[in-house]
Image 1: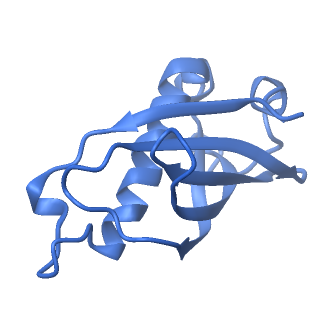
Image 2: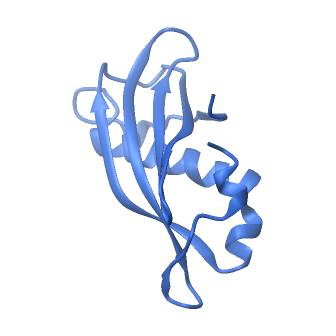
Image 3: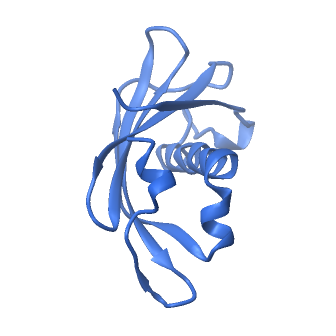
Length: 128
């Protein structure tokens, strides 16, 4: 069973569109927020060595709208690994049964000093 990571998202009025729903583009910001928190909490040493994870692909399936006073949590986990890339799966939800969206990003490990892709660091692989 893969390890999961969850974080609450604070909704802002500026996240809403003219219909009072969170704008679809903002969902990707919520995914990014969760991903950055995960890496800051658990994988900071990787970036301190010049290894970064870059988004190579992002997709989102919208299920039900998020409105201003909804509770929003992003839970993510690693679903697939390759040599230098891995997939993160996401569930944007209310902490109970309501799922607002599901998503996936393909992340590529990149050495900013050598300017090339590199193997997934062991500390990140351990999340799978």
